[in-house]
Length: 333
Picture 1 (cartoon, rainbow, N blue to C red):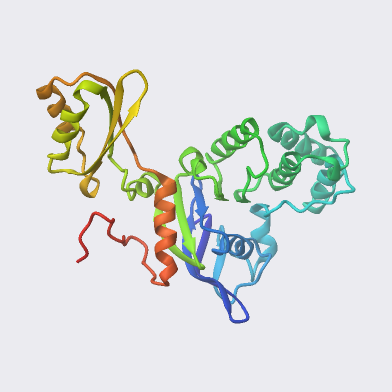
Picture 2: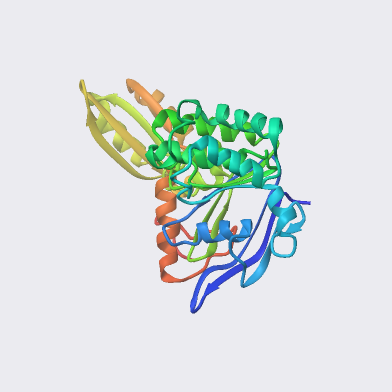
């Protein structure tokens, strides 16, 4: 039994299909990064999984409980941080969390114990007596996260969990997500691509309500034209010869060069079809006696892959999961 199971989930608003046959599963120990441009259907999909919206077709289950047919059982297993973290501005974080504890069925010392635990986790100690409407966006986000964690759910749906947080706070929340992932199933929606590398075990990109990509962050990065690109810094006196030699390598499709400080030149060699070219470049460097002051191999650039996948979908041509459009340097079949 999967922690979260989504099959052919569909949501229509009149003539608009916001979610169109989305299917995926998430198991305990996984963090799924949910990506897509604005209006892609991310938040709508999350609202369907959490029972805030009723699907037009398909289903979502949480630990085997259908969110429409068994909503209470499903929601007992779920913690949800909605987009924008709607809160009661006139309440204090303490009063709000006490209210959530009561809604969740916790009273007395048990409620206070759970509140104390989540307050420590998300670092709310200094603002517990302030009105929520006076808090910064970052603190409001942390209050929203605290209510999602209060009942120690087995599955978490977090819509932009680090939105509005400063760099230190983002690091704290990412560390918290990483630690919680050991025994929970977690879905996070994010516009911050570095979070995919930092906390996610899987990534999914959707556009116009459909799944465009599903795989590991490494598989996503491998779709980048920069995957296995080699960057090296050489002395300016050998740069021209090095550039010509690298351009002649069979596995290299393009070479870029640009000056850097102190008489050095950075050369970026782009691989053909993502093949590894490091060994060939290293051999060329040894044979040519190049003075190399820096060498690095790129895993791939997620922002470039994201733009490519989502831009290609604007022509309304759907690519099934596991299929890939050819890169610009690949000949069309």
